[in-house]
Image (tube, rainbow, N blue to C red; front, top):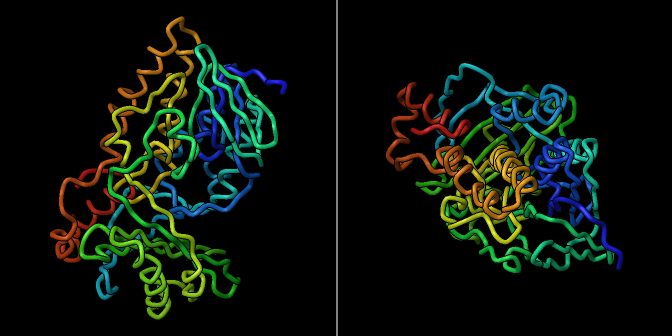
Length: 371
């Protein structure tokens, strides 16, 4: 098979991979961006994106206001049985309710615009790390050769162990699932996000997102796998009965896909560097422990990886430059990724009776700040 030659191959065209591909393409590097499925594609995620992503999108040449059309500032915190609530105060916009299929597609298109070559709809079947190159074999019999490799292949990649990375297994494992539906004009409402704290008396939580054309209920369950979907069904039913969402999503919840999310697992990994390779995004456990939000941390990790890759491509000692990625992300991202330094169970009574504590909980959840 003929090989196409690149400076960098990126496996995974989600937010992490597309961000890195765009930044490296803008530097003039030849980038292959490879995804196993064709874009756009549906993705199970938290349903929202932190406003902290705005300057990063500008760096990518994208307009936050055009790409993210549903900003929200109206947030309510609830207790587990929805009998108590409080509204944290924020000084600025909190974030955006995001359509992941549209968002991911826009990021991938930005990468192509800045010179990346997109290979989509065919999974990588083999990765070979040679002495001076990386060779990818695709299911459609294409072969890609590059100097360096970025793994942005998601939470359940089968390729990680072939390269020498363990699968993320530390952090705070959560089972996440969601139910969503498009709203009719009659049922539509303004952007609002609700967070249900302490579903299991501890770290499990739920999330409601509603806006003019969409309603979503998400559960992030720290207990046994078998209880996650019933918990989502019950949350959908209760939210509809109490008019927190305008539509009953319990049927969608019963058929929802369940995904294991190793929130903050990056902190427990010895290294995100292998031979010619960096590991970023969900594959590297770059997910906020407080909220299980992974889009912004994934893009942040990609930005730092692109810096290390750019330096490596210009160096005679590329592996030494790649090794700087571990210190880069730990110095800048660790506080955002780790859990709040306290047990949420003991704070729950205060959150619903003390406005400053509610404000701090809101900042911890949406901005990764310490309680």
